[in-house]
Image 1 (cartoon, rainbow, N blue to C red):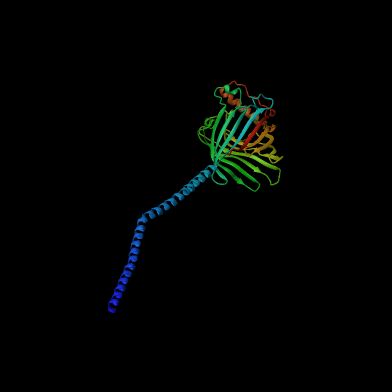
Image 2: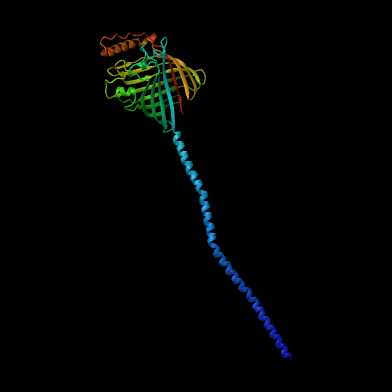
Length: 363
């Protein structure tokens, strides 16, 4: 009996152990299956992860692209602005006004005592400049003349607006010291254009159009002068322009008009000076030309407008020149009309006229 009960207990214990073994084995299988499923899920999601990573990279590239484009655009815009910023323009206008006691259409604006060929006129030098360095730039100067005359335009061939050509060269501060400076342009006419250069058959005429300034620091007194030396080379030595009434034309010029200035205020002043003109004309030797005196008032309205209204007149020092010019005009006139009357010599009191200079920076 005891043997039977013992066998039953042993069998039951074995069955229980077998069942326990079976129960413990099942979770191991589940873990393997779960791991396989997770692995399969990870493998399944790899393309999606790669796609996300690729999208992130593209988004990063897209985000950086506009910045690069903007930077390039800024560089180009900055370069264009710098190029355009190198340009500048200024002007200097000379107006020859009427003579004292003369009709407005017949001014005595020349030192000979006779009206110039054009009467009341306005001559403008308009310079366009490109900055090459801090002091020097490439300069092109337009030279324009406008005639204000109510009677002369009826004459055959008379032109009220005259394009006097252009000059090209370098401009800027040419020389400079502690209290003085010489600024302007070293240039020459462009061949083949302009009323006077064409009529004279001019090839080249290198020279200066410059201004000299001297002023001690703190002083109200100063010295100013336009300085214009120039050499002329022609194709035909005998060809003349209508303005060459004496039958000659310039070959070498040294012209300056030094003046003494007194500052009334920061923008206003008084000026008195004269013109010094040493020249050699065709067929003649070197000679002193007319030396008219100028007196006037300067007013700087802004950097764009400086005015210099003045009176201008010759002196008895030029009486000999007036006589010589009258004889030259008579000879030139009688070559065309043999019995023409001689030009009378005008006194210096007939040379006074009103003038106006206007100059400034355009941009």
